[in-house]
Image 1 (cartoon, helix red, strand yellow):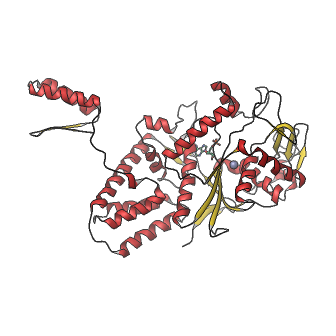
Image 2: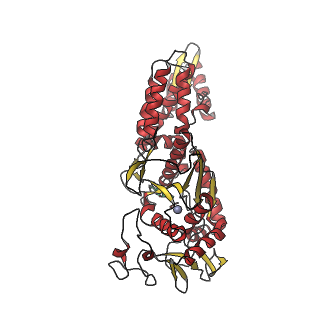
Length: 460
Ligand code: AMP
Ligand code: ZN
């Protein structure tokens, strides 16, 4: 059975063939750990997770690296450039290493809650400074750089082509062209590989360039090469990585080994909110914790993501989350019904479902179609152990943790128990006004109240 993935490099869907049948080697650009991940970021890791699960479902073993960007451009306010780690350090009055550790742990906790299958290797940039230094030295040796007093730049005009992913041409971007840019650079697409640290720079290391630090694109090329070699199967990231970060990674790898590092480049589209961008200023930037506080368990967000293909934008609304919540509950209930069933089902029927599911996931991770197969199994009127096992098999890809799902016991919280007790007393005293008043409060709180000869049944 062939697997087809859309490859940004060739701009078409292609048959996926691993370089080595025994093990697929893959790299994913990980988070910059200066704040809590927002749900848009988390979509990127749910895509990465589905890709992992689909490859495993097809029987492959994986060696997968994800980086953690914990070194930023830590310059003073007077200097240029984004300074995420430094801003966070100031905001929280903490050391940037402490900030990085805290938000890395928070990120890992979030992806665990989403039941993301963690990559085999999670590599922190700050633990690979020497790897990056060796990598950059070779690029210099190979003649792809030039230096100013404080920066080693990559010279993109030395490449046969810069911009292979986004199909851009370096000739269009020469110095003096339309756009203004750093006058120290020869070409507008050139970028910093290694930078001398100003006095007030916090994260810096002794290197061939004195007290200095790496440019932020370098970590992915250097760590990818260390763990996966100079040519591997798949590289993933968000669509925002296509025009700069991944072009620069490819440039660095060509400067280092002459090769484009990965055969397949896969990119996940953005999550939008109410049809627009998420941003702090619009007050519409949510974390996983925000969703939990609003009563959505993390797996509801996972379920919501299956409503769209990873290459399409997805629009986040709370109405859509409510639908995902209902759908997840129905799916679980449907699964439990099959757990209790004993109907006889033919093996042909099971094989047909399996084939449809496999066709969908192997067609560039088409999760909406895969979910339609899952629903067909759920809704099958014959309840059967075979369907239960089939759903568990599908769940290796879905990651909805069905096997651990049990019907929640109807345990009522303390305040509800108090109200039920007060209502029972009112009923004994034939105080119907009070009893009705308490019943209305319980209904308002989301409970059903049924009085019968055996007593009162209160349920969420
Ligand atoms: P960062 O931590 O900023 O490096 O981003 C981590 C990942 O989240 C990257 O792969 C980005 O491409 C991705 N990303 C950022 N914003 C969104 C969004 N709104 N939807 C989907 N992915 C996003
Ligand atoms: Zn990267």
